[in-house]
Length: 566
Image 1: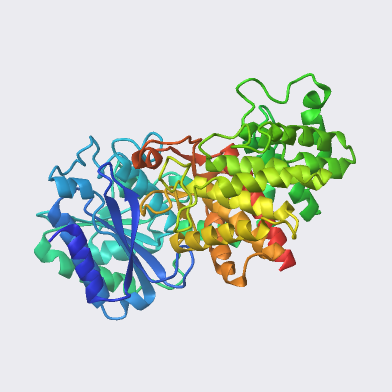
Image 2: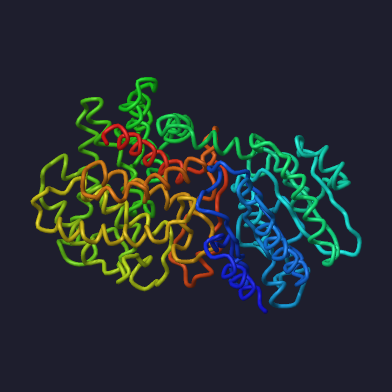
C-alpha cells in the first residue's frame, strides 16, 4: 500500500483518535503528512506530549516502523490517557514515492543537514526546514525517532534530565551524538530560538520493534505528570502574556523609523500611538514621531519619490490622523488628505490610481487605509465613493468567499487574503452607517471571514497558501485576519460566533512572538506569482521583520481594545 493508504487505514482503525494534518510540502508538491492526537493544540493541554518522527530516510521499512509504533502506542493500556502522541510517519515522502532514498529527488537528504541552512522553505531540502520548525513549535516533552537496522540501540539526547537515568537503566540508552541529525541539532543551542528539545532514537530490526517499544512504555509510565519540557514551558509563557504586554515588546522594536514612507513602517508608527492610548506604562511617542517626520513636513525631504509613490507608499501615512489628534497640529491631517487626493485622478472611472489595473488585493488595503481616514477628517463623500466602487468592482472574490491575488492570478495567497480582510475592516470602520454600499461591503466581508474560518489551522494560524495544507503557517495573514475579527467584533458588525476564531488566532500569533520582538515565518514581500510553486517558495522570515512587526502591533493593540470593550 502507499503511504496515504496506510495512513488512511490507521485512521479508519481508530476513528477520531488522530486527526490528519501536514507539516510541509516537498519539491514534488507532496504533503508531509502528520497525525495529530486529540483536539488540544501545543503548548496547551494537560497530557505530556510526545512527537514521533519516522521515514526521514525515505525507506519503506522506516516508514512502516513508524506506523507500527503508532498502532502499538494506541494499544498500550492507559498510555494515551497520559501522553498525546503526534507523528510524522514519513519525513521524506518524495524519497519514498520516487525510490531515491535517502535523497528526496531534488538534491536534498532530509535525514541530515540540521539546523537547516538558508532561507525557509524553498531550497533543495525543504523537508528539513519544515520539520525543524514544526517539531519545536509542537512544544514536545519528548521526541522519538525510529529507524530500522540490524542491531538494537537506544540513544538519548543529553537534555533529557528527568528521563535520562531511567532511559539508561531500562533501555541501556547511550548519549545521542551532537551531530547534524534532526535530534542531534534539536538537543543543542536554541533551536528556533526556543530551549533544546529532548530526543530519543530507537534503531532496531522490525521484528524487535514492538518489544523495544514496550520497554519505552514502561519508562514513560514512571514519568511524573509535571515533567514538562523547557520548550513547552517557553511556549506556554509566550501564550500567557496579555496583548498589551506583547504590544510593549513590539513597540520597543518597530515603528521608530519612516524612511522610506511605506505601510510596513507607517502601520507600526500608528501601532505605537495606539499602544500609548491603551497603556499608562507606555510613554507617549508623539514628540518622537513628530521629530521623525519633521523633514517631510518641512519639505526638506519628499514624501514620495519617483517609483516610490505606489499604494504601499501612500498607506505609509496611516498614522497622520492619530498624530494630528494627539498633538493638535492639523498639518499632519492635511498631509494625509493631500495623499488621498491622488486617488481622485481617474475621475470615478476604472481602477483608482495608483492601484494596479488587475485589482490586486494589496491595493484594497492601501486605498482603504488612506481614503477612509481622509473621509473621517474632511467628511468629503468622494472618498468613500472611490473606495466602495473599487472594492465592489474588483471581482477577485471567488464563489467560495476567498480572494485571488488579482483578476488573473487564481491562487489564494495567505497575505493576499489578509489584505482583503483588513481592507474591508478599515472601510467599514469609516463608512457611514447609511452609506448605500455598506450592506453589500459587509456581506462580502462576512463571506470571506466565513470561508477563512473553515481553513484556520488547529494552531490558530492560516497557511501561506490558504487552501494548501502543508504550506507554512504564515504570520502576517493571521495578524491581518485577527485584526479584522477583533475590530468587527468590537464594533458590532460580526456575530459572537467569530470569537473562538479570534481567540485561536491570538493564541497562534502570541506563541510566535518572542520576548525580543522576533517573529516566526513572515512571508517576504511578494508580487503576483505565475504558479502555485511561486507562492510556496516565497521565503519565510524568521526573526525581526518590519512588515510582520507592524501588522502584529496593530493586531495586538486591537485585541487589547476588544478585550476591554467586550
